[in-house]
Structure formats: structure tokens, C-alpha cells
Image (tube, rainbow, N blue to C red; front, side):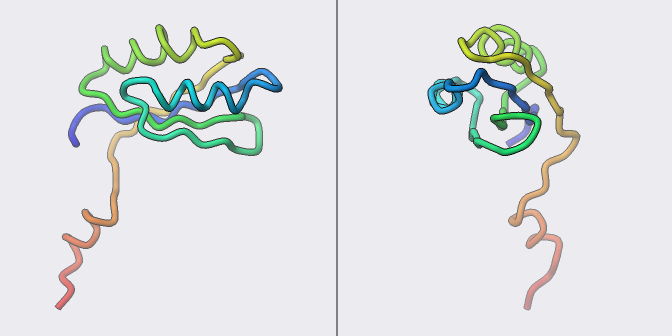
Length: 92
């Protein structure tokens, strides 16, 4: 898929992580949500058509969900998949 891909790191209020993860997974453009250990509580993968769509999802949807304390967004320059790598390596 062409477009914009981003990894959104999310700090959540204690006790709201599971509910928040379920809400995030239902948002348009959010393809996966992971509960993680470390500085952040959740990681959301977002794939949208253009930057304006990304701004909408993050600023007007994710950040406004109850329980979101803060976010950090990593915008992907390029996405590598197993399928792409297999196409480059000629397996006979």
C-alpha cells in the first residue's frame, strides 16, 4: 500500500490500557495495536493515504481518547516486508 505509515507510541493512564487498546484498534487507519513494556504502554501502527489523514487520526482521534496521557509519532520513510525481500532475492 502506498501512502503514509507511522508508529504511534502511546502513554496511557493506569487501569485504562486494555480499554484504550480496543478503542484504538477500531479507529480508521489503525492497523494494529500492541500492549508493550517500557516507557510507553501501547504502540499503534497507522497507515493512511496522506499526511493530512495522519494528522487527523493522531491529533483529532488518538490524542482525544480518554486515558491517553501523551504520544510520540515515528513516521516511516520506507516499509520493508517479507514479500518485498523475497522479490529481490531470486530463489530457484
